Length: 139
Picture 1 (cartoon, rainbow, N blue to C red):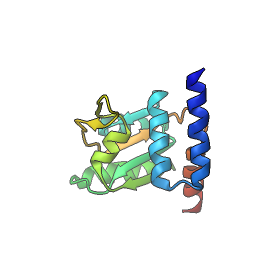
Picture 2 (picture 1 turned 180 degrees about the vertical axis):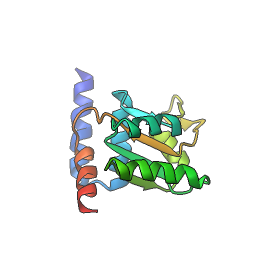
Picture 3 (picture 1 turned 90 degrees about the horizontal axis):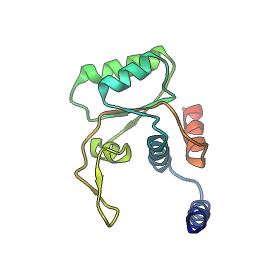
Picture 4 (picture 1 turned 60 degrees about the vertical axis):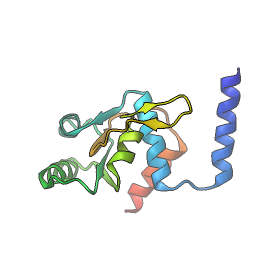
């Protein structure tokens, strides 16, 4: 019973803040997809998911040093009409996609950087997913 009460408080808190930013929405969507086993992380998994058209969206880091890496992901997204969003920090993307350890206080430790993440399954429908889909429509 206490878990349901906590979820209600969190939902009330997000509506009180108003519209969520694209970055916050992306973080929430990645967390939900991770819970539902709907993420592909790393070049090999992402390329396979994009090529098989299993992906709903892809996230790529702008600061990737390998130009071929960026070209491959962008080309696969363009070829299969998959939405692509770019983020600035590989460590943030790694943390959002679950490539870290969480300590007792809830802080992320030992974060591994990640250059590409593909969402294959959004999990449940959420406000964050709707914010991202609206963002893709307006681009």
